[in-house]
Amino acid sequence: MLLSLDRLPLFPDTTVIQNDSLSVAGHDLATLAGRYGTPLYIYDRHTLDAAASRYQAALKAHYPAAAFVTYAGKAFMCKAMAQWAGQQGLQIDCTGASEIAVAIGARLEPASIVAHGVNKSESDLDVATGRAGTIVVDNLSELRRIASRWAALKERTTTSIWLRFQPGTAVETHHAYTQTGQAGSKFGMTPEEIAEAARFANASGLPLNGLHFHQGSNFRDPAPLLEAIGRAIRLAGEIGMPEAWHFCPGGGWGVAYHEDELPHPAIEEYVRLIAREVSKRCRQVGLPLPTLHLEPGRSLVARAGVALYRVGAVKRRKNRPWLLVDGGMADNPRRALYGARYSCLPVKGLGREMTDTVSIAGPFCESGDVLIEDLPLPHIEEGELLAVPMSGAYHLSMASNYNGASRPAALWLETGRARLILRRETSEELTHRQLSIQ
Image (cartoon, rainbow, N blue to C red; front, side):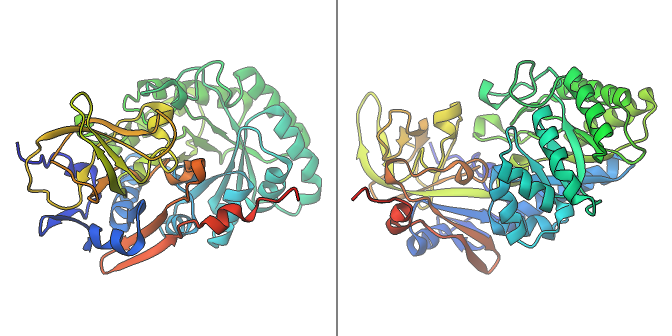
């Protein structure tokens, strides 16, 4: 059987096969791996631009009031991504002081920065109240701590306060760890807590003008989302919102990680259903249409990213053949955390027949350090390169130094240009913050 091309839709838009080798944005992936080493992550600008355009066009077509796309920085945050978000006119969702610092370093205006976090530290709140245009408040304690800071910031009139609502329902995802909106979740406030928070905010003179919720990540069925929108807008009517108010039903729209999951869920249909439901529910409650905010991360950036690994040892066992590569759970913990499925292609020799079924694992001292299981591939030799698509989200942002691993380099690809946006960590950098006891 010839190598199947049904995996190509998992790769960035600009991916082509040239001279029996994979190329993205006109760049030969083998050449990039040779120059920058592996593991190596590449991000395709064209794929990012196209995804952002689909969201913006869908909002313009289906929502009759103001609307914004907010890039969820937790998917992958660095200066280059923040700069790209700014160039696209996106807001950016930052969790904690460090992500806000990255956004500031990318010269984003405060109005573009939305501060998130479940248990914000004192430092997080200090930075957020001074530099973020919007603070999404997760709990009553946090709201009280914000109020204690507000007296010194009376001159700052552009910061908004939103409350994070726990709608009591979750979307269907592939793992419980990616669900956030269900009753009993650590995220957000119950309706009773929201009502108390609203009373406190109004009594304290805080600029409360928005409601937010998030139900889960990488889902495809929007039905629970529509139910939660109804609950949230009804609650907004009960607590009272100003004429110009904001509403965010989160993000989390899914993507396909494996060829068995294709096609990718349609962004326009997701946006259309949200826009229709928000409009309908506001009419029922008698509220003006809010400024609508959507927070995609994965569905903007996952497909733009590809991880390149080099095969080291090959164990050709009858019961389970293994290809051991130079990266794994330290740069992509999703398989170990969530049982996420992936696919891959060899970087060279794509015309070969798929004669083997193999599992692919990394170098780390954990049985859970497995990237892919039981995948048909050609006969792969030591030293070959493998390209894992759908690697743009929740890989590098969750990477670790387990077993002393150095976090990989990342490249930004445009036609005719490849730019380094993350340097590969060095051993010196890993030991720099370590102090001796002698």
